[in-house]
Amino acid sequence: AQSVTQLGSHVSVSEGALVLLRCNYSSSVPPYLFWYVQYPNQGLQLLLKYTSAATLVKGINGFEAEFKKSETSFHLTKPSAHMSDAAEYFCAVTWGSGGSNYKLTFGKGTLLTVNP
Amino acid sequence: EAQVTQNPRYLITVTGKKLTVTCSQNMNHEYMSWYRQDPGLGLRQIYYSMNVEVTDKGDVPEGYKVSRKEKRNFPLILESPSPNQTSLYFCASFQYGGLTDTQYFGPGTRLTVL
Image (tube, chains in turn yellow, red):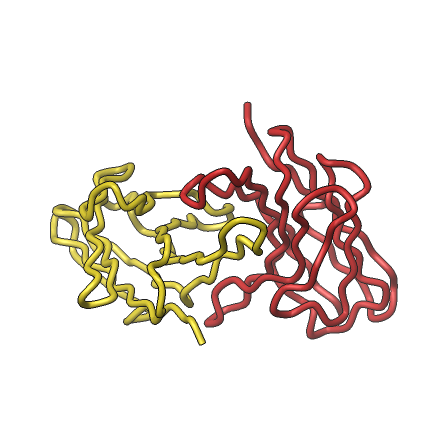
């Protein structure tokens, strides 16, 4: 079955440190990949998406992610963490096409804590 | 402003009392979907709709019903809620024409069933 795995349910970094949130997918066909962020008591906001135009994708708030087909990964990074980055992050994939369900399959989420 | 709205945002109810969570989008999207979010499980799809009068089950449809009589609205119905339906619910909408188009999410409805 197709699935998404986020390694680490909780990641803690210091302010100014590198943020690395891991996402791997299992699929026999190329997926479409997304990262969403959820701030406390809020809905989901799209950070970035993989469109197949470029393997390195830049998103909002200084985040980026690199699609590596050979590793079936789509890890999210940010060079320097800010206190405002504290939130839960979800990797999501979809494989639907032309008349199919465009269901997003989500990872279980990674809670990012940023320490001063 | 493009948005998906949900009502109510918070709801506490008792077992067996029928309830409806409304979802409305103003983007003329054809595709709409309901997800539930539970700690440690991420988001899981409940039902989806490809267009008016076209709905189908997602991964966790048991105990839920939906309808799609108008393009903009996609209510989620719990006819006899149970405590295991206590969760955070999100409605989403999307216009397919390319899978990489964005799915827009509503703000969420936090439901507690006692």
